[in-house]
Length: 258
Length: 255
Image 1 (cartoon, each protein chain N blue to C red):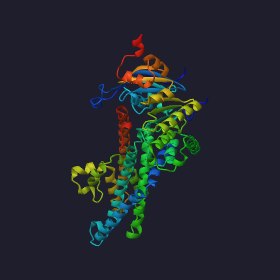
Image 2: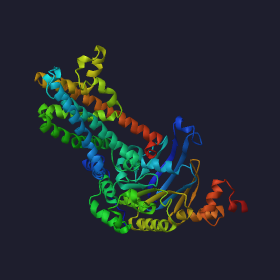
Image 3: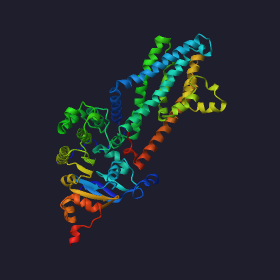
Image 4: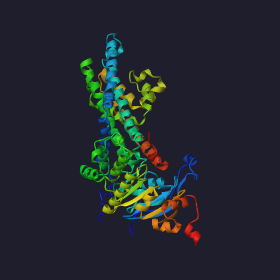
């Protein structure tokens, strides 16, 4: 298995000033290790404060780890992240694109930042694929949540990333739009062979999209496996129940039955 | 199945990325006509008000009356300083208000490219703001700031380095000797004044206009100090950026 992302003993402890208000004494991520295979979709699953967003932020270089190593596409992200950033991208409902710019202006700026050669052509392609052609001339701030999600996805795909990191990609979307986004991500991965790592609270989304799930609690990976493996291991019918078992520290049914 | 690959392994400076950010700020500027109007409005108003004050002094044969345009020149050069620091601060705040820093810094954009884009936009905003006022002074008062010469004007635009001190510009105004010579200040404060580039710019302007001597010493001092402050400001920015990456502030900033 060729790895797109390799994380070894990653630890993030926030400095003392911040740690006073954080559970776990500022320890957001506690010596986690995992590998994401090229072309796969992996989920970071866990409750609030589990360390999902922190892990994504460290992978992107927005946050410096306290300890550990990270390699993306073979490059050491702590020393050579600029070698791979043009082949990665990111989307989060908590990080917005400028609202006063039109959709096309935003995509043009990001296309240039990522060194896309034919920015106009790429925008037309994305406008067709994501059904945002009618939105290109509109200010981003005027759009509905669903429209903004499609625009954020267009921004995240502007450079046709080999590694795509998504923080809650369907948060606050209606079921129809959420389903459409999930379908698009499936098609994008199938077409491009991209590697996707996403953080999510949506269990149905994880079951549908992901080959591998990393279950986090209080900064630690406490279980991992494919959705089917986790369901079997916990003796549950769906990932939501598995999530609750882990979040509430309930004993595994399968294990308990043995 | 093919994996989409774009540019890989680029580690150098990219004018294209700097251009991308400048484009982003120009889009914002272009989207709001009140913003464009506001850039030119205050300098124009100040030129009108201070121009009449200058005319008053001229008819009263004071020291100022010996140096036609000293006050007008001071107003215009002070506004260059004010506009340039505003240009950097506002462009940076735009990114914070729009919660866009996270997106910017997961792209291949380098922090120093971000600084260059901010400084370039500061120059653009200053030119938009100052040109109408400078041109207005020519027919109204027969005063052209362009007569000061290119070196002094370039020196003033170099004061964009001061833009990193968003608040400091107001604090230094009394000791920058904008409307009066440095010699007016108490002796102990004169040393502080000469440690600031604006004091050299305004002293140089007065030397040029009153004594008709090109102020080479002030010009060189201001250039040297500007370079020093620019280097210090750049280092402080990079240190703050590194600290923000430790604390996770790049994802948290917003309205």
